[in-house]
Length: 400
Image 1 (cartoon, rainbow, N blue to C red):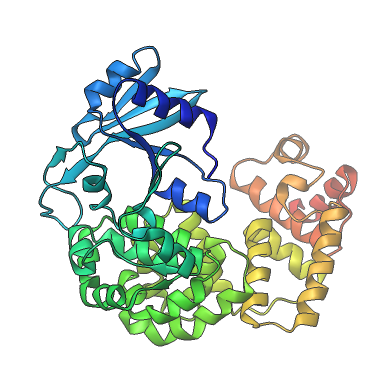
Image 2 (cartoon, helix red, strand yellow; image 1 turned 60 degrees about the vertical axis):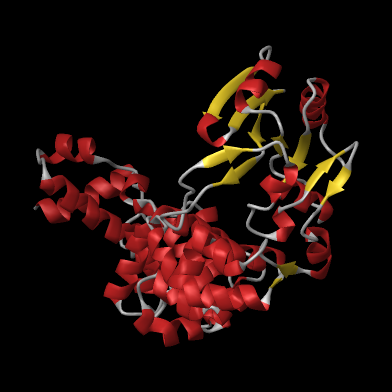
């Protein structure tokens, strides 16, 4: 296992001070999977104050001293260094009421969610794996540390994390854990919508998303506040295999042909930013609209909805097979030609503006907007050339 130099330096400094230090969790898991970890976490027998003393010559951030975490900045990279700890009672199905620091690594590993995340590594001691996480990693299994019912009741977000890991890694969830997921799914009501949304956005674009969504479809319908749309979801989920790994397109496919109020509530509950939410709702509304392979029609569509919506809609229609492939290909060719030739389809692309019209015709306010729209339609439909003089000449028809 290859550990980056800046992580080795942190571990060495901790050990030189007489304490233990290990790379832990996701970075160990990903390393054994042959992936480059996105970040590295270190766990230690040193208390937060002892870590601050050890790294007094480094820039440190007291990220969560109460929970044992200090962020150490090394080579401009933040590394979270967390004291071994024992979680107290969970009273809200999400957070421990208290945390007790420990000097034993196994205490810390035993509180973690899944065996594949409960491994620690140190160059001197090698792999510390009291719950056989490496075996589960090799077998492709998601298994809880200890009782699944206990783990999921402590922190209900772990239910979604199990599903997300299964979708991302293509691993099978242990049968006992599956039973607990189904029986305890109602506990997700105690998890913030933002955290649920973050997990769903990662899960829906994962390589194994379709099989996980199909197997646990009632749970996802419940999360989206749309249990009555279960049949629609079951019909839509397989089409995700045909789509790009884009959460906007995939959520739009998932909500295809659901009731508009149901779709609106689901999008609202996802707590997405307003632009993303509007885009999904627009795609859901437009999904069954028949697009015509005609330049004027496509330019009118682009004028109203823009290139991003148009391109996503083409992807969505291709994924859902709601348009003949030959028709979609023809539409795409026309669209590409419009872009390559910079053909006008928006008021901003006209070779004339509001100031020109005010000076020429002594008009203002809404009259200018109406006239510009008329000129745009004339250009789109080939009735007028997009040149300053021709547009002025054509505008006189509406002014007179």
